[in-house]
Length: 545
Image 1 (spheres, rainbow, N blue to C red):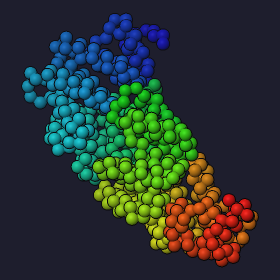
Image 2: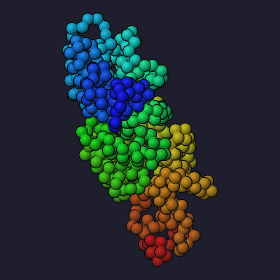
Image 3: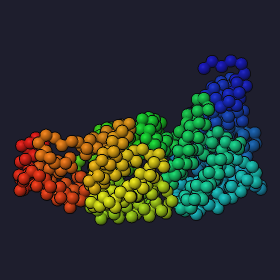
């Protein structure tokens, strides 16, 4: 970029309008020409951070820190150390971050009385404790930091300490308090003099906490707000780390699968390199999820393997992929192992819906019912509508698998209402498919056809190829030679001809063994058959197999 005139004046004008790329270029030009004073080096660090130049930002913070020290301003030098620590900490680089915290602490040792920098020290000391799950030790530091921020009027410190307090409340299962505090933080972001670096951190951490609490409405609202904030600033590099991953998750639930795929691919590219926390693994996992839902088996499996190599267990996605592509027993072993290792409530809640689905597939309905009960307890404990919807859907699926379509329908309709309220079209379609199956089991074929027709449109719109293929098999007209059998009876006959037992057929079709026996009896009566061997011969003779 060619820079003319006074670079510093141009840089300050760019900063005023949030043009971070231009500000970085002009400040860099001024630095090459005559060097920058510590205050302008802080501005250079901010511009570098906002445009994704993390290495340049770290260098500028270091030089600003050293410059303030030479001028004898230890408080400003400590503040630079704390900004350096903050940026590192929220990238997951805890060890170097705490090195900078220690440096800032030494600079404050000779100070007297209360200061904003002391508040920053308290907050940054507490945050690693919170991230490691030790809310009790962190709370006194965070409370003191918030009081200092309020007394001395430092908006950045107030946001930082309250974010830490929100995470601590989440750890202590004070969910309502955590959500209320998040709302308070996010209301203050556009109305108070908060630095742009802290604004970005606040948005991303709020989205992260909402996702962990399954507060999908809030997560979506703050994602939209973050998008608007980013769009208003040229050259800004938005959505870093876990924020990118959560953006993908929100798109996926909302049915914007193309956007989810783009976000996941971008996250994998951005996070490649040193692996911090599980961000890269989570990015690959989300990529695998979208690929699996679209039926792209090979690339889904590759993404799950990459997630595993980056340190993220690829379950439950890999188990669901195995369920779709291979023997159910293989998927069952994978999901059982993952659930057996999971200790944290949130981790278990992410595995339980898949565990129910796979246990139904292998006809272990006792295990499925136990998982439904656990998922319901977690949903009630957290007060999370999303988990409540999953628990209700799972309960309906188990009842349907037991052959109790009449009792399944109210549960399934309640789950469908939940997904409609949360604007989750794929989950709503999956439930409507089960509603159609329940109606068909009750011989209400007209209602079943209406449900299947609506579901087909959603699957086509989303690009859910495996689900669409399954639905087409469920609703296919009987082929020639079916002898007046219903589509379900043809399906059962084909499975009998393939050598499956009644139990295996029940698991494959997600119906009860009693229902399978009834279908086989009807088949024998309609076709005048006396044995499974005769049924097998009929299927082959009439081109059904």
